Amino acid sequence: MSEIFPRELKWELPGTSRIPFLTYTSDELYQRELERFFYKGHWCYVGLEAEIPNAGDFTRTVVGERSVIMVRDADGSINVIENVCAHRGMRFCRERHGNRKGFVCPYHQWSYTLKGDLQGVPFRRGVRQEGKVVGGMPADFDTKEHGLTKLKVATRGGVVFASFDPEVEALEAYLGPAILGYFDRLFDGRKLTILGYNRQRIPGNWKLMQENIKDPYHPGLLHTWFVTYGLWRADNKSELKMDEHYRHAAMISTRGQAGKADQVTQVSSFKEGMQLHDPRFLDIVPEDWWGGPTAVMTTIFPSVILQQQVNSVSTRHIQPTGHGSFDFVWTHFGFEDDTPEMTQRRLRQANLFGPAGFVSADDGEVIEFSQQSFESKPFHRTLAELGGRTVADTDHMVTETLIRGMYAYWRKVMES
Ligand code: FES
Ligand code: FE2
Image 1 (tube, rainbow, N blue to C red):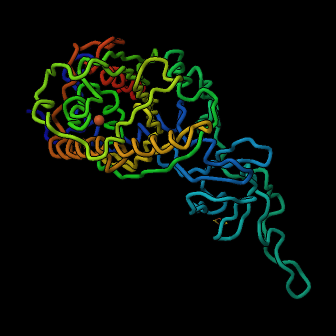
Image 2: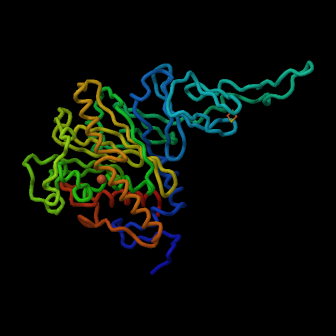
């Protein structure tokens, strides 16, 4: 056995089919992940335009661990500015959302425009005392040099991304053509409506959430609810697609129409007699824009998951809070042309998801219990060898190729 608490990452085999537990437990690696994935060279999700429809509307969110404000400017454009006062660094905005003409830091009342430009500094020119002016900022103090940090912003189909990196490539190139196609399928320009939020803190490494949605092996096994009520079957027609760097992925599946199939697991048989008291949870109505698939789960690395699971649609924002935990924020939405019945249906189906969802509660738990093992046995590694040890798009679900793909990208960028 090697060291129990290794400092160096060791990959057991070439490739990424055996992932060291240390990738989930090391603070040093985590800091490097923040730098290289969240603060440089990548776009991070910050919200939906529909959350801030009017001039001055804002929401407070994060890019990595850094607090930012997404705000609608007077001219209708969207700014993302860092929530760190240019004076003494206070995190000045405490509200989760609201409407403002500008931002004022309560500590010494420096005030900023919606663009993040500094506009007022109390006692900048000192005060008059016994006939002369005392104090104040130095004569060469220039407000133009002391605005808030402004992020680069990209919007597409009503979704807002931001980056601290002014050199980051265009969002469309970042997503790549295959993933962009699935992005546009969901966000095709229709106006979105916000139906509500779920928030949870999951005591596990942030990458485990990406892996969970890149893992088509588990839904038909862990999520007995899915299987019992026929929403997920191992024989669903399905495809897995990645961008050229293997960082983003789409799991595309089409629900079998042929009634109950022979399951390769025992899950369905022992739940055979179970019935829902309220069958409206599964009152599924196909929508034109689906264009075939009944579920598409898209992971946009590193920060967000785009969910379409029959009539339930949401974004799921991954907000890391240290190597061993992250906040997971779900924004359930609909479309402006939805009938009231469709809105009700989306809300009902949303009960499958979120921290206490019939399906998603399972994912939060397995992530927590995985992290517990990683912490106690950091010299060990996980196994992701279903479907082989290589990485490629597939037309079936019986593979962990997307996880191997994500770690191929991780190793390249992390140089680890
Ligand atoms: Fe914000 Fe002083 S820290 S005004
Ligand atoms: Fe799951």
